Image (cartoon, rainbow, N blue to C red; front, side, top):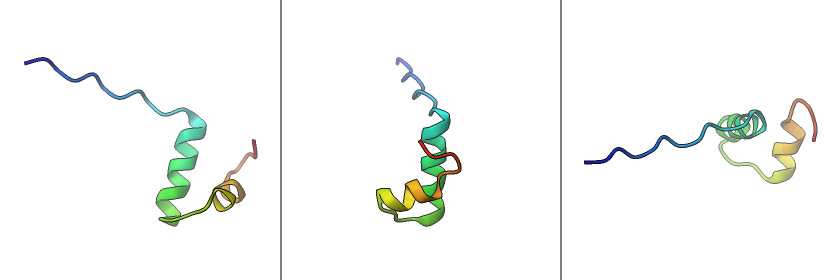
Length: 40
């Protein structure tokens, strides 16, 4: 049986976005952007 490859790690920005979504549970793009520490 072959092993499945590990999924790629998230970038720093992707991790920030996922952390915000996890904290807020539901959020619009505007909510996510307003919660980012360093704006894009």
